[in-house]
Image (cartoon, rainbow, N blue to C red):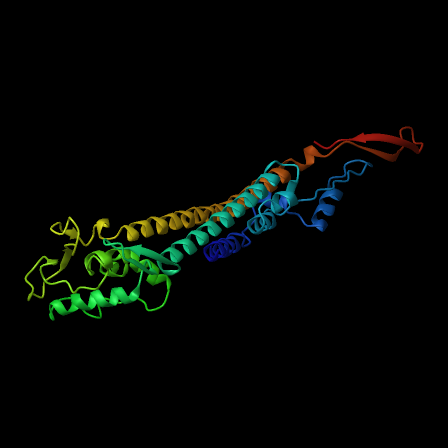
Length: 325
């Protein structure tokens, strides 16, 4: 919504610059006459005893554009409310606002769901020997325990407190980091009880055999690449740190976050649509106004006029039909 307001502000400022008064051509001077100039022109046009009265109500294209930039369709209604676009742009505006609100609320609902999934509800996890453990799917305490082990493997590598900077509160960055970066996978329940605990769920400090690195243990270039499970039939299979096999819970969480992002992306599309609708409505209002001003005289309806004439030197009342075109 803030982006939409900013776009409207920028468009309005550009419109202000666009609408600055420019030198008038001869045609402009004829179209944009003041009332006094129109009356003088009518007096000059009298070639007989008859007086031709012209009622020319010119519409302002600048005003129509500003009105439609603020409220799509308002400028068209001001200039000529009979044109179709007078009603198309407001309908588009209502539809776009409805879409924006719907998908934005949908994104918020999905955000609440994945936050609840991560650490907003407790579940029961069953270990290999049938032991039931109750806790959150993501636990900062588990993360802190395992990352401390990794930091103590080598004192000269990158794994230290500056590398692990997970927020201690449930901030937006916290929910982003636990699904985005592999070094925060330790907090997920299914990772912790598979790679850092025995079959009964008791913590076991993994030795260097269970940790896989891409360099020597005492090298500053050492990087953690994965772990071997501590128990089960696949204890000899390396699970890389960027694999979803590390944590199925993390994979589910990532999918939930992506669903929320998709809803927000669609809402952003509707925001851009609103900005385009305001801009298009403003430009169309200029078109409608110019067409109205160009064809106003020919579109005036016929009118009956009573006047006095002297056909034979005698003043005689007359009835006439006038149609400007």
